[in-house]
Image (cartoon, rainbow, N blue to C red; front, side):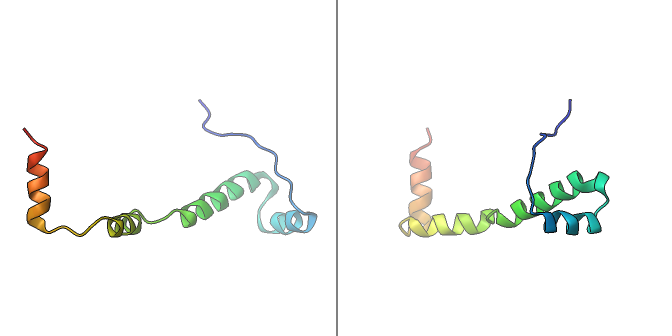
Amino acid sequence: MDNTQRLTVSLPKYLYEDLLQLVAAGNISSFVARAVETRLLEAESDPFDEFIKLREKFPKKRRGEIIKAIRKGRV
């Protein structure tokens, strides 16, 4: 099973010419895939930062209150 999706992308001519100087014509797909993957990874937020932001929205509770609430939910 092939794990790829074929798509058509339009680039300005100058950009395409620069790309051909950097990458052989047969390697453009893999180059673009790596570039997109890199950009997507850069755009992803850090899960730890997201946790801290979420935690800041909740009311502050002491350790004992948290443990009591946890135990209350258990049988």
